[in-house]
Each structure stands twice: as C-alpha cells, then as structure tokens.
Image (tube, rainbow, N blue to C red; front, side, top):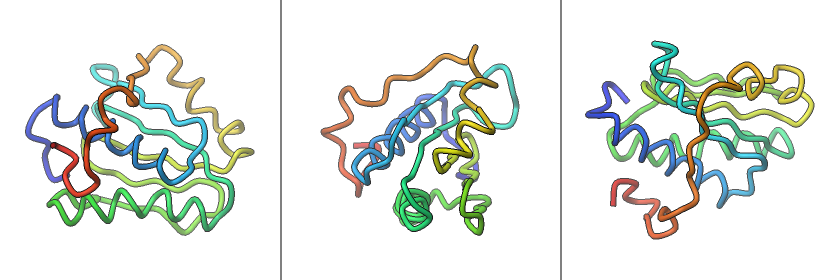
Amino acid sequence: MEETKNTETSLELAQWIANTLDRKGAHDIVVLETKPGTYVADYLVIATGTSSRHMHTLLETPCHELKKLGYPPLYMENEGSHWMLADLGDIVLHIFDDESRHFYDLDGLWKNAPKVSWIENDKKKSLASPMA
C-alpha cells in the first residue's frame, strides 16, 4: 500500500488478509492493532503455516491479489523457510512455521496490542474485491 486512504481501509484490508489466510489453511491467525504504539504499521497480521511451500502460498496469495487491486507490497521477505513477511504499508504480514512463531513470540511482544476480530462479516467479501 503506497499510502492507505484511511484507518478503516487499513482495518478492512487486515481483516480481508486474515480471512484469505484462513481460506488457505493458515493456523493461529491473529490481527493486532499496533497504533498508536508504533509508526511501523497500524496492524500486524500473524499466522502459522505447516510447511515452507504452505508458508509461501500464505504470503503470496494475499499479496498477489492486493497488487492486482493497486496495493503492491512495499517489501517482501520470502526467502526464509521459518519466517516470511510482507510490508503492505499500514499492515505487516508475518508468516511463521510453528517453532519460529513460538521462538520469536511476536504475540507476546505485542501482548498489550488489541486483537481485532477478523471472522465476522468478512465471509461475504470477495477475493476480487476486499473492499466490497
């Protein structure tokens, strides 16, 4: 995202990303609201994949769809086999394997950040239009 239009758009995109990950079989999906505690991102989306190939799919699927909609990732780190990420501007997507998720413990580091509900109402949204 070059620059997100507003906070609501960032929230909707974070929720859409989480639901996309869910449809692709990600585990332990969490969306954390990190503002105003950091300037790095408004939201972190954290999920666990079951294999290196699965982690690549979890990272690349939402990024590919968002790029088609005009929200290309600012940066992607997908060479690792334990922790991959995409900087989407106001949202940072983290994909871990199970062991690395526990080792780096982003959930614990951000334990005071509010968790955002991402399941409700999003089942109606299309992959082709996260803002629908």
